[in-house]
Image 1 (cartoon, rainbow, N blue to C red):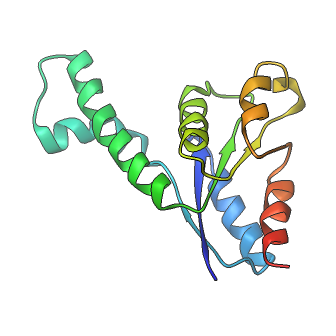
Image 2 (spheres, rainbow, N blue to C red):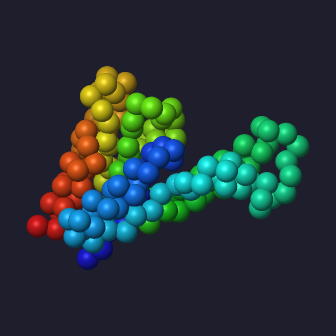
Length: 146
């Protein structure tokens, strides 16, 4: 059995590659999907598909519609959602994705540092599990296969 895992979180570093590498090392039969990680593509997809928009508000709105559509499709097809919260970047998209996953009743693992315990307390309470490291999240998923 293979499970599909949606990796929600910031797109500015290679944490998704690290998760995939660690999962492979643990021989976990996982397929990973997630948001568009090419930031320019994500920002410009609305105009690429729908044409030039009359201003930045409309450009962002068109891109958001298409990115939200993509996220909804991939998240609905996923078996598990991992939402990574870090300290370096703003976390609005991660919070939105985690909330969506919980509302869809997707099994959700939140990864967050100790410094974010207080600001994420309500969201952590709604998730299935909250951990502090990628390894802890993968060990939880690995437990499924025992």
